[in-house]
Length: 118
Image 1 (tube, rainbow, N blue to C red):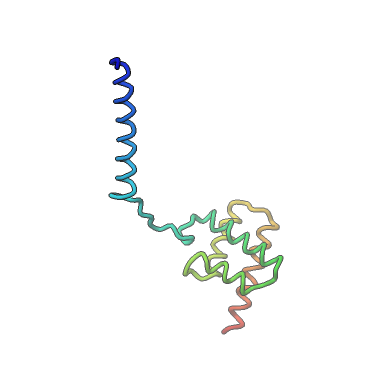
Image 2: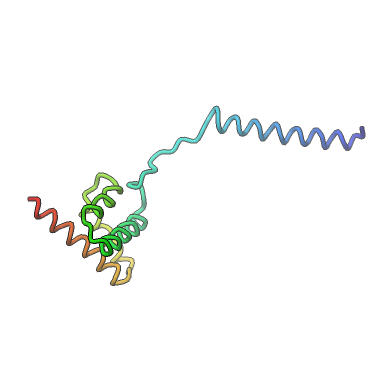
């Protein structure tokens, strides 16, 4: 074989060995570990969008229990506190008045339900 052919074979073997070593290290020795990846770790803009979607579903379905279950997905924070933060953020970011109305309507329904429990 020519010297040039040996270089190509050596180069190919080196690439394959590096690829195999990288996979072995990444999967076996030091795999990725995720931390703080739950929905409660979402930034306020994504939480606001999620709450807006819940408010739209509440408007369409009228099921407050399901809306509360969906809001509970965001973590241990009170649903009313989550909605107040989201409404404040949406107001500051100039969301459409119809969207703000949907979120306020859901917040009012949740507040009325909580007042009825007391």
